[in-house]
Length: 228
Image (cartoon, rainbow, N blue to C red; front, side):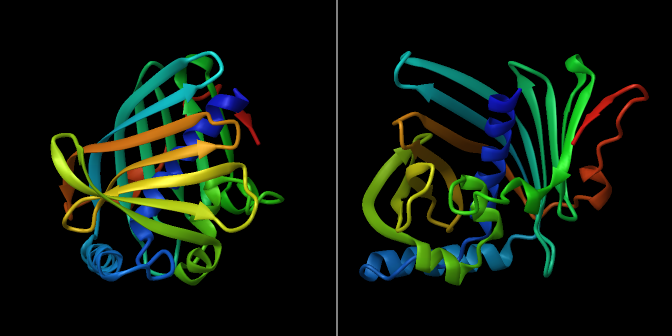
């Protein structure tokens, strides 16, 4: 359960990349242009619904587990964004983040893990990809070195590839980000210190559509076991 929860929280980290404007020090004209487009995209994005796919690779066992579902994203002024991920495969599970709290509900287990996003990163602010949620753009610039690695194909489309290396010791070596021409982060890959990786890809994007705040509420059935 602990490992699966970690995978779910990693999903939040990816979605939080939408909030990144200029994420690191300038390293050339191309990188500056990418940051400019990311900032413009961030300012224009009022909501998002998309398909989400996450592949987790264990390099020792040479095994990859794949998860797929749908994600909803709703930025809020002065607060953390609202996020909801409904995983469909291989396990039906719902993650919702709203008003500084998260719920991870697993119907098959009849249980829900609840807590605050702040507590989720407590004691390991620099040691989890979840730290992206709590960092300002200034903190990101201070904590990451970013390099532009060129244009690569993702889903048959050209993407800018950025490599982000933490300046301080963390639980992961680096984060690779693929950004489309509109400044939209489409894919992120986290490489952990043991070389295990998690790659998250968005697809079938629906931007700036009407999403209600109530969509991020998870109604738990009677008898659900609550784990805090």
